Amino acid sequence: MDARDIDRLAGVPLVDQVTAAVHKLIASRETAPGVRLPSIRNLALRMRVSKSTIVDAYDRLAAEGVIQARRGSGFFVSGHLPPFSLSDTGPSLDQEIDPLWIARQSLGAEVALLKPGCGWLPASWMPETEIRRALRLLARDRQTNLTDYGTPLGLPALRQLLSRRLADRGISAPVDQIMLTESGTHAIDLLCRFLLEPGDTVVLDDPCYFNFHAMLRAHRVKVVGVPYTHSGPDLDQFEQVFTEHSPRLYITNSALHNPTGATLSPATAHRVLKLAEQHNLLIIEDDIFADFEHDPAPRLAAFDGLDRVIHIGSFSKSLSAAVRCGFIAARQDWIEGVVDLKLATSFGGGSFSAELVLALLKDGAYRRHIGGLRTRLASAMGKVSAELKTIGLTAWIEPKAGMFLWCQLPEGLDAADVARSAIEDGVVLAPGNAFSLTQEATGFLRFNVAQTLDPTIVPIVERAMQRSGRTTG
Image 1: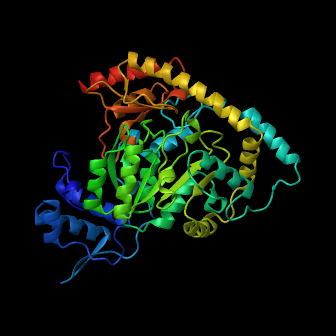
Image 2: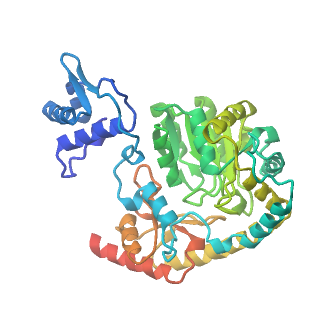
Image 3: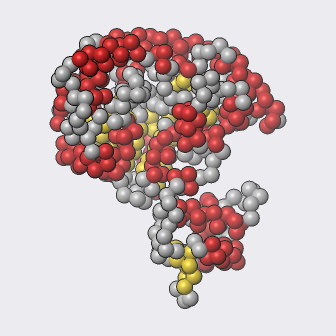
């Protein structure tokens, strides 16, 4: 708790803001039952308010039973904490930029809603016919495991194939250094359990995939954002983070960055790894969009040799979100510990999903699907970029591949206002601050080009911009 928790322009009494800050501290588990809170004088200095404001706030919290006053000793967190609530651990956000609300809205949305802000391809773009054929073949094959748990590391034949695919990107990962997971999200969750303690500091790109924010709040760590440029993280600010925060972990996309579509340059990659070595920083490289690339970009794991970089991927975006199959490639001495965590939290893996992915990879169906998908996405990228430009939305960068356009609104427009207006017309947008830890992406929207081809979307976005402009003006 400090002066950053106080907004003197908010029109909210200072005592209410102090009370809310203490509630947030306790809800986030940054303090535990029985722990002494800062003294009245100390907290007043830290928050830059009067001692009487702190006295009033502590009195209210004591009356609520949240804290206890002990004569001559100070104020302490009361006995049992309430059940953990993820929404209580972060800043209070408008629902249009709250990552959890956006996820609920996109996943639970009515079929009639158009979703240019979502992060996956339309169902009609996925190889459903090939998946159904592979399912029938597996069902007839008596060797297919339909009833038993998978092995701890996951299906050996699929891990062998993944090892060869990673080698094509310059990443040396023997089969015993690869473990299958249920998804990319599952992989990062396991790795956070393995690498982090509550209170550790994690560096994220700003902007970055919005679910990273929510997941890291669940792990009760501190998160610091570093601005992302056209070639990777801002190196000056990245280096400054080490001086100020001593981070333990950095999570990033090195290729086809989400949401910007940018690609890490070799020079930036080398500098990031040099800083990581100097400051004992670990890195998770999330590479779930790898198969959308036409030409492979630099991979941190390739330069690093899986020393301090852990490489993850999945098939949720490129094959099927219903077929849950991801993987972790890491140092061999780390894999055993991560396997134990996998067994402790989910026991066996989904062996049938792994069998299905293997079948599609082996018979060429996946290769043919990806070839067509790249062509289709390239066409959509050009078309949508041109259409958005006609209504004043300009791409921050022209991505080399992938599905995302990170677009800047005309000056003076707030993306959250535009998203709020568009939802009234049945269009779900993704405003920039949903991806920004520092909330400095107010003027940006992320568009999924594959989901923006419906001819009604761009006119609806234009009307939403016009209505928002009138409101702000």
